[in-house]
Length: 46
Image (cartoon, rainbow, N blue to C red; front, side, top):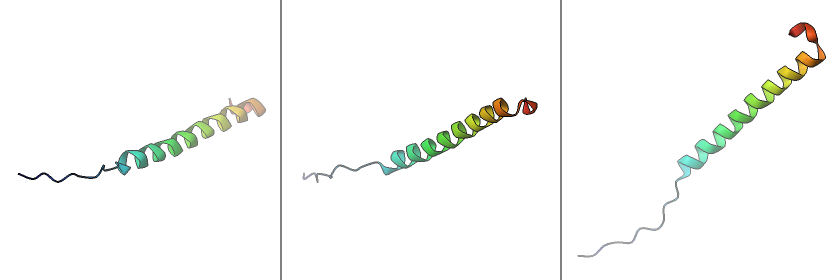
């Protein structure tokens, strides 16, 4: 009975999903920050 040793497999799917969610989180956070800042500059948006 011989067992082949598999090299360590790196899970790129998790890294890709994390990178995508980081970009999405950054866009949402930046958009919310711009929205809040624009309300401070132009109170009529409030």
